[in-house]
Length: 100
View 1 (cartoon, rainbow, N blue to C red):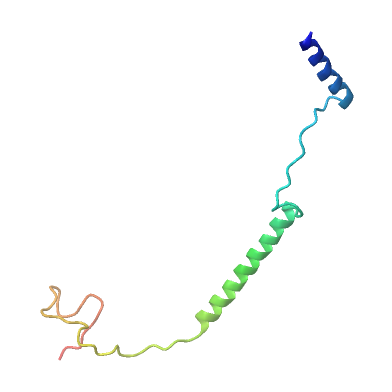
View 2: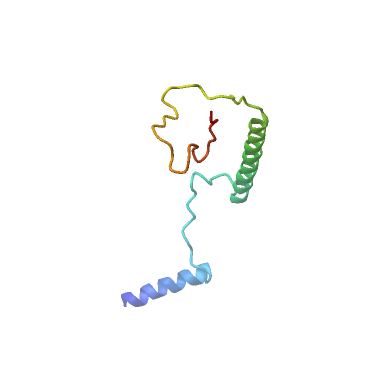
């Protein structure tokens, strides 16, 4: 008898509310409480494009400025110490020495 009354109660709820069973309300998260997802995506797309443009302008500005090249490196005594010649000759692989 208890099963019959439970079925009758479920049947009465379905008939009263229609065939749609009530679902619990969606939980509102704090991050999306007042904003639409499309709005957020558009906002971050604009921020990204602005950041790309800013970085590109700064890179062009920094790379276009001239900078000083020294002609001769400082004559430190510990640089280019050679106790014997290389097997392929007196010059290094990437340097040409002035021979006397």
